[in-house]
Amino acid sequence: MKVAVYPGTFDPITYGHIDVIKKTINIFDKVIVATTDNNDKDYHFTSEERLEIINNSLFKDLKLNKNKIKVISFSNLTIGLCKKYNAKVIIRGLRAVSDFEYEFQLAGMNKKLDSKIETMFLMSDVENQIISSKFVKEIASLGGNIDRFVTKYTAKMLKNKI
Image (cartoon, rainbow, N blue to C red; front, side):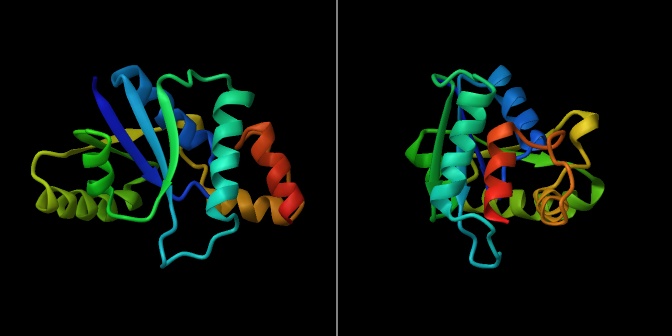
């Protein structure tokens, strides 16, 4: 079975992230969508809330195949997660050229940690490339409509949190 790990904060998950997940399940037998608590970031949602939002967005709102997607949280290195799930590929989403430098460095470090694990960069569809969790939170906090950027469940949770 070909397994890939798609790590991120997903705070919250957007249609840009979901595009990457859909593309990944077309390439791999299973994708592990893994949300993490990076100590360098300020989170809007707790890890438990993000798990709930991701699960409801993917499986209730969008009815994606539960057999192809596993949603988890983790706090260790992504390489360790790959080993745990026997994944040979880390998926990273790119929106713009500005993402590439950081992602390139991260891929290089992961390759140094385990040369058998590859990083694959995927881009969301053009209409979703400008979406970022940061902008979605800002638009929601200012009373703007975020329905084009996130699923119904995510929008509801953001509105309740603000």
